[in-house]
Length: 361
Ligand code: GDP
Image (cartoon, rainbow, N blue to C red; front, side):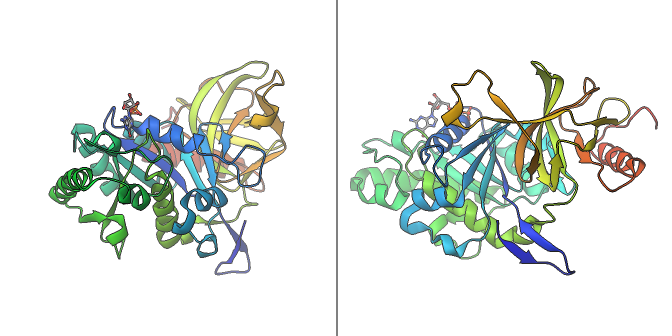
């Protein structure tokens, strides 16, 4: 982690931006996530992609390795990207954090053949409303007639290897897509032509199936994060943890547990946490913090390992008593060094902001 100066004396750490993948059904969201998860340096090596609960972490080293000459890792000081594993705008809009959307940045996947569809439009409206920076993955370029697939390479390399005919067909489809983005008030262009990403959306031709252009998507996400999210990513990593519940489910040997994406601070195995629920916020003591075992150790019978502490941004499982009424989408807050009343009130206010009123009101 890199340290950055903040206003006061406190030293902030830059956390990993949280990325969501959105788009119309069947346009390739899941395949893209699978491809990103698969495009890994061997697990256990430095810079390997790691599986979190509900999320996948792609370190900067991996982005730079995949992207080759596209990325000079010294241009970046954010540590990488954390992809939420559940794609779709439903999860995007129900998963909130203090400031708004839980995801800091997004990939909008659009099938180049199919163009804008109802869920594409819904997704783009949500991105606009939440002012979330995003990149468009113009997906399934390998289905262009005559396309000659190239594998996990940057798009320019693949593009150069195509026939004139295939290139022209792709260009036509990409310009149609850029036109559709314009119809929805987004000035867009091929990402390599975009000078100012604050005013223009970058379009990246991809094939989630073959991997072409996937390094470019990762690169643009890193670049956008670095440019527009750096201040927001500066956190007091030692501070009390804050996160959002992804799921509530039974964990063998631990009772009911919550899957959480942590976007601020640290949660420790001896912390008290406040969790939003269908009724009053739950105040409970952590019994165990669980994370998936590294792939290298997956042969042991237990899929999860108990850890002492987890810092943002990360996905983890929190086992604690009384979590039965915890609610997906609700806030989770560590109490540490504060009064629990204060934290309960914080959680209640946040639930109210997302349209849930607790029994007390
Ligand atoms: P989702 O509903 O957006 O998550 O879409 P999926 O990832 O499930 O993809 C829908 C279908 O399109 C699956 O059969 C995928 O194999 C296929 N698909 C996804 N991406 C590509 C691609 O880049 N090229 C091709 N040829 N097929 C793709």
